[in-house]
Length: 375
Ligand SMILES: Nc1ncnc2c1ncn2[C@@H]1O[C@H](COP(=O)(O)OP(=O)(O)OP(=O)(O)O)[C@@H](O)[C@H]1O
Ligand SMILES: [Mg+2]
Image (cartoon, rainbow, N blue to C red; front, side, top):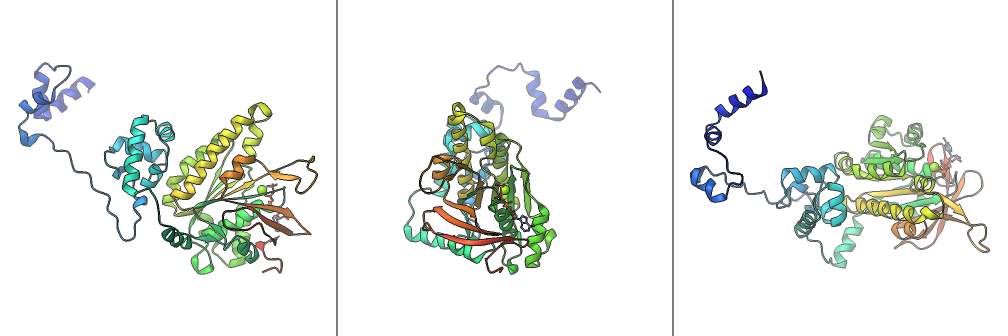
């Protein structure tokens, strides 16, 4: 059957469309013309949009973007496919960035942001309520009690924690341990939640996860199935993986996102003084994406960072985390690792809004991150 025949058959089936086909169509149909030929009761009434309902268990910021007033299915689809799946995600975005990521006009982006903000009520908050909210924050244990004490209970959600240090200082091993602590069952001391692991160096080793699981007698299959690994081959890919992560975060009840390492691709791709500005700008954008993810979805973001040495420094440290001021200002808590005797490592908090500059000793063993007494 030809395409032409098909159209005739389908138009025959619908009475109103068949009538329209016999009248010559004016180029632009004014509203009153439609009202003349259509009886009032047949004019389709716009369906009232369901108002976002705050239930007892659901936070308003968790409501899907298709409930923003004025958002049609096409725009909702664009938002969701670009990773903006909740009201909070849109409310925290900037118009330029939302327009760029979702391929929508800047004015539309502004309207969406302001509608989302008025829905979830972004504004001032009472410090008393903030304290209550902070007391409810989840802290992911590190496997070592002394490291947990150093970090005031563990790795906090809604924040970006950096572990930096020379090679072999235990950055990746800490990431493996945090994977197990997040994915493991609650009755074993875990969070029973999902993990997103962005591996930029090709050093993710599932067999290490299995070894660490054995320490807690945790079912390995269950733990491994909760860890989603994305191998990032360059800095652009690394950024795309972060944009794609909101879908996984919601579906997999993710509470931890790891980036091991934050800067290795940026360092390799942008060499020489001439490209330093571009590198820092891109890194800054990336860090802001990470911070927003942490806050919007209430997850812990942990990034590892390499170091560079400054041999001309006369006093104090001669090695520094890469990324300069941009990384320094963006990370919520920064932990610097260095080697000690044998398997011992020293962790020092070098920047935090609530932890003093103190240090502690931990150990790396077959069972993962341990206290120096082996527990
Ligand atoms: N199965 C294991 N049992 C005991 N210790 C291990 C095991 N696997 C690795 N390690 C220890 O972990 C150390 C490496 O730590 P890690 O991989 O975290 O380094 P890193 O800080 O990430 O280094 P890089 O900067 O090169 O990525 C090794 O020195 C080794 O002592
Ligand atoms: Mg490593």
